[in-house]
Length: 231
Length: 253
Image 1 (tube, each protein chain N blue to C red):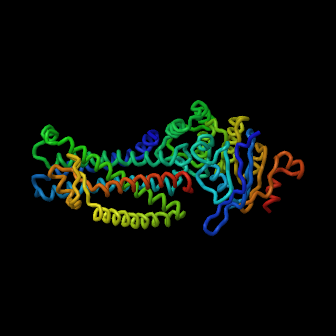
Image 2: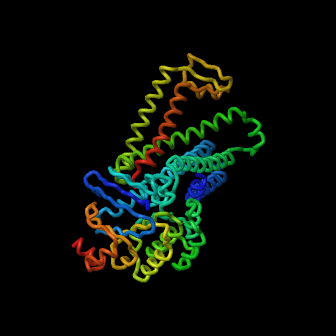
Image 3: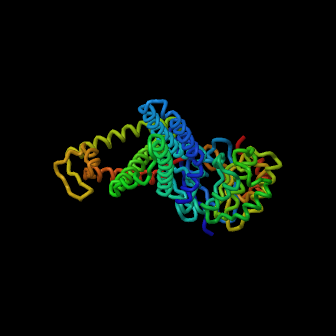
């Protein structure tokens, strides 16, 4: 089966810092991959390169057979870890925006997800709390029928009840033809949905494998393994 | 691309309305003072309003690009399946529309303030079609080419100098240097290649002093320096392509 994402020896350097040091990571269709690591380990940098808004210093990244660009942006649904929606927008404007620009956007699914997330489409983006903004972003991203979903800290700043709701939304809206890569600190909350995990530390993948096999081999949960790896 | 224009216009809708409302109210105020203040003061203030409104909308157009490059809204724009060329073209067209709306309202209000007799029919009767086309093209060219230079400097500043503050300072320095280089080369070209083209009859004059262009235009001729015009077009195309390339291949958020 062809990989939806292939990265070979991806490095990213800034003036005085190496953010990535040769990351090799492949993702096959139908899998949810957890990219786990502490702050500053390079998770977001890697995701930004895959999303096409950051460029690697060396190495190669291929998504659905192409280097990041206009085509890959049309098949990648990216949830960044910031408040990127325009402040003048109402929720319905944001939905229309995504519908206008992404041919794979499913407006009916978006409306169902808005109901599920208890979001009023007439609310303005700037009036939403952090948790509600996170739910809105996730609604928009999951309403696309993308080949690859890239979710950067989808549970960041969200209360435990909302976390459960978000996780259910992710699981219920994930299809077997798609793939997903998720970064998080909240491993315990989210580990149940991972098919595979990759632990990243100081810009390098230090451990990766099938989530279930790792649990069996190490006789511990992914959360416990995370604590072991990064202790 | 047109969808981008639609959303960008929507985003700046309130700014345009705000500037136009201010210009209209200020001109209405000037109208009430027309008979009590001397005419030079009214003309001067009306002119200041036009210049002020244009400066504000021009800066607003630059701020939008700056926000895309330095703030979180860039994540929304630059993750869209749109090429750098498409993003840049939509930004230029949007800025042209925004500036034109403000220019139109400002000049119209200024005309209504200063004229003693409102007569649009005589105004349109006196307009020469070819002169109007010449000024329209010059106006569009002036806005699009100057914005292209500034947008290039902004993108270059962001690409070369990653930090937000240093990127903005760098943009200014790059702009100053680039403007000086373009002006110097342009002046040298006029000196070395003084041939001009009269657009009214397409005649070429080899001994024309290009610095007299404005005088010649007012007397009915539309004279341009051939070498300088070609140079300006090449610079515009070069900066546009370079900016698009930088957005596609080098821009890091």
